[in-house]
View 1 (cartoon, rainbow, N blue to C red):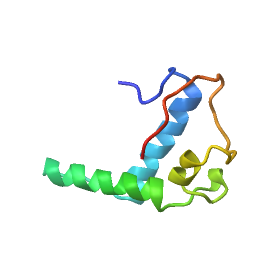
View 2: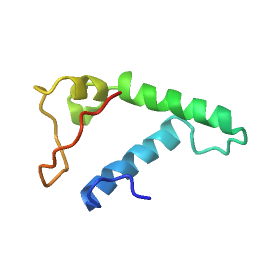
View 3: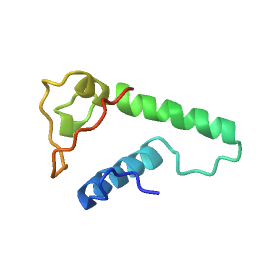
View 4: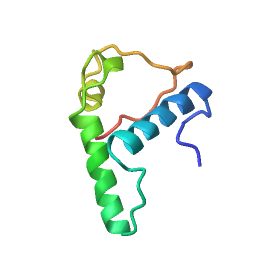
Length: 89
């Protein structure tokens, strides 16, 4: 299963970087035996990552803030202009 849209190696690098951040900063690397707890922990981590954590690549903005405001310019690794559905967070 690919977490990228166009099998673009640049997108894969970004996805892998996010996975590393989630695993090491939020301790999702540890073995969690209870699947409901793992799902809850992952959901909370993704919420924090998207809504509370600022990102240097977004000029210290939060991803949710950037996605909700189309006038904010940010660095993109996408090589082609693909019309994607609006991201809902």
